[in-house]
Length: 387
Length: 166
Image (tube, rainbow over all chains, first blue to last red; front, top):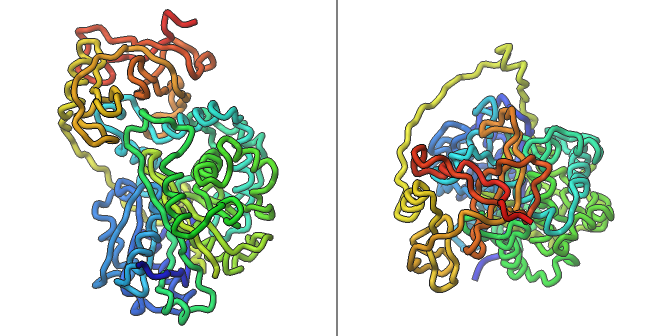
């Protein structure tokens, strides 16, 4: 039997293309902000889980160990987890099992990314995630595989580039109200269509920017959580799943591994009809098409129908089913692991009614956060409830 | 709770407004190709594409592997497959691996090879303009001349529209 676990505090830093602060400093600031929000001190933290993406960005091997001091983890049980872009939502899952298992009562989960050290563009580091024998000699870059997936998705369900661009418009606009946002803007579908092609169908405004930043939450067991705050946000369901690395051997139009991860989380949270029971979702959106693709994998939209849901206005912040009210990765920025954790922070604030100008209009009691990564093969899903 | 960091612009770096520490790594690697892909590369040198058959799910696996990751058993035999297939999906890359702009865009595709079921490989399309590419079109490998093949995926120069295209 697992114990019930809640989030009791959250904090994050500014997201920017390059920040003066080092990774350690960013970890410290996000962790300190999370501690302060829960009126806790580092001595209250029994264990720490840290998430950060490829070491190649920093040019630092053993990045987990390097960041340890900034995470307040020296002389404590400490683990770094890494599942590519999915890290940000997997880190609180790993922290969840630290507490749910009964091993610890209070655990800090912090995610950090500094993509700026590698210049002129961090893109080059992604080269090392590809198969050295069969893929790298072709000159592969990371955007290739997403453009291939986007094109396949468009083909299978007859979705246009304009349909997809609506997501970038919505999320960048939502980000105008986020104090940490890097690329908040008022843009139009036409702006997206006319932006520079990177790897068609992916254009410049379809894609989230590289960023520096950090975000953190504090998890506590039920009994302790109720002492820390009157408004704990419960982690009622967690799920994760990986498909094969042989990504050219499967249908890219539908993320089956995400459906598997979502069903795992829904089963745990006793969610029977996700579309009716999830009030607000922070869905992974490093590219605009991914929000649609993920809504479908999450069973929050029918296959091929997420674009229609977006056109209807339902997923706007004031809509009946707000998706990425934070502004998402497209608007707030994409410091990889920290971006996923930003989504967890957003739901913590939304479900407590503390999201300020970003607060969704509808009464939100149940939220879902999701992230995605590796070679288009991994997803992590968390279901949160305010009671 | 939010911490306001200090953003640094490219101009700040250029003007040394904040100090930075430059470094470049130069690491050299020599990778083993493995039992399955090693043979695959050797066959490419002969102008042939080879896969491995799984007796349980009946798939012919390309790229080949000595085990089927779904059934988790050893694959049973080598099977030659056609060097032709259909375009499953494609994209047009305007950037190189380091995000610099390419002079001439590259057409990238997943090609589902004939006789394999669902096995696709990542490669490049040639002999066709980007605007003429369609999902579902038939393509065939264009090989480097035999003497220039080295046992690499690039022994296939690219896939081009097949002569038998409708």
